[in-house]
Figure 1: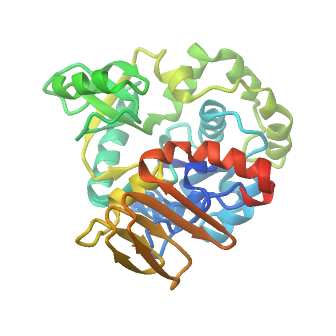
Figure 2: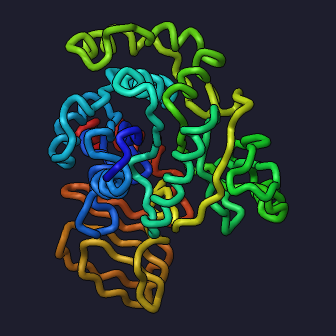
Length: 358
């Protein structure tokens, strides 16, 4: 029997522009089967969380234009489980909205907040870690995050420094935004830093209390009694959401709070943020080429990432370390080392070909 006090919020409002041309404004990456496994990323995330959290207690935060996509892909979710953002306002307003809605349903709730588009290899270990965090947050007034054991000095992630102790759950010393390579190497060598995965756990009471302390204006804006879980909720959010400060939960709450703790975890995490991170998760041939969708002949070609329509026949000759992605009437060919330029490429495509293609 699943614990009725366990809740979750899946964050599914992003566009994932670095996965263009597959991920677009109309159909973002969380709704795609990026690894060719038979489920979209959001479907996999919902299923993983549903192992521990009752399906009716899983809320999905997304842009209002993705409402039909979510309901189509997650048949277990009802419309009342959708937190529809009328404007993009970063993560803090969305998380506060979810916390107040959940608190109205169950003041004893403990809440997991997780992105919709991450990949986790060891889902049983993930469930164990979340259960450990739920237990701690139901007993103490703490805000928790999961910290990934780093295996390289990656400069694309934020880092969490913790106080060394014998306790399984560590007190957080501080957060560092994406560091340069030299700093990341020092963090890795020190042994008391973890990657910030953006996965949080807290009780409904504790997170509302944290907003009261650090973002009181936002709490006042959203704090409307007898509104949540009624027919007044949608119009209230529509009227007030755009007035919320545009700020992340990291800057707005976590970096200001004194009761932040971290659980070091190792469950085969990948944030699937870029084509390169997807390439790292895929099976490769003897020449380190990876494919999704296509049937490909590689000739004198190494280290390539190829994704096309299902069954497309592709021949690659003399190409090394490239991303080759086809979607309907768009083809992207880009060196893997330049994948961070894809955001700018998207802007150029919009200017040249129009917004229908992005």
